[in-house]
Structures are given as C-alpha cells and as structure tokens.
Image (cartoon, rainbow, N blue to C red; front, side):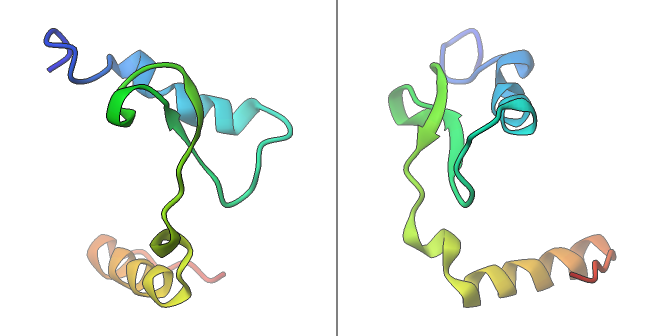
Length: 76
C-alpha cells in the first residue's frame, strides 16, 4: 500500500500522535491527522471532525464496548 501511494510509512503515520503529544496550543476535541487526499497522506493538520464523534451516547457505547473487548476497566 505504501509503495502504491495509498498509505503512509509507519514513521509518517506516527506524526499526528507525536504532534498531539508535544505541540502546544492545539484544540481539544479536535482531529489531527494527514490533510492530503481523503486524509490518507500529506502534512499533518486539523481535519474535519464529524458530529457523531462527539455525540455522548455514541461515545458512551464505544467506551463500554472497548472495555468489554479489552477486559480493561477505567474509572473516569
């Protein structure tokens, strides 16, 4: 996939996480990732955050499913 230009290398794929962990002044509840064609590559920046991502019932359901599947419970 990388050779065809349809995916990034592991190093480039880690850029958004590194940026979010080290950059000051980023928005909370924002999505940072590749900003190129279909968000598959290109420079890292703020991307479109779809409304369902911050929908409370959806977040609650995803959290519960994640705990169930990983057998890890987090008290928040």
